[in-house]
Image 1 (cartoon, rainbow, N blue to C red):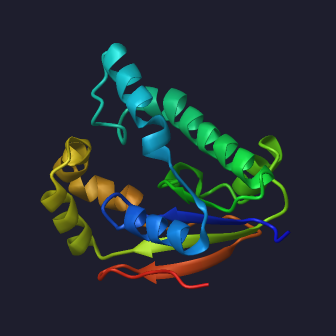
Image 2 (cartoon, rainbow, N blue to C red):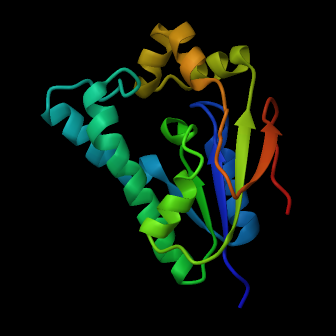
Length: 182
């Protein structure tokens, strides 16, 4: 049996992560794991129940300190289950909070019992102007804070300076719709 593969598709909101991740999952017969689909409704409920704006996660300390770690732990746990079943996975999430932790994936793999697997991190990139236009066009409530604080958002989330070790990086300019080969 061939070892399962891990594809982690990262990029800011509106970069086209989801489109690229879904295409990759289809091309590789992999499980598609989207952090927002797995945890989004629960996170939104908790934010509302605790008196927080569910559309503002970027500037919300309660979210960043309490819910964000749980979202990523859940995502990595579900990925581990699929990998142990021999199923390749595509993870669709920004991961920005963990870019500066070189051994983040190694530790997550150990914590959630990932078997040995080849990991490719796909960095989906677009220009600042294209990203802002896409967020405006899609008109989602969760993008309201980003657009209202554009310079701050771009300064924090526009960069994909990921320091993870033990992975292959693939940079993908998504100014136009593209697919991943290999």
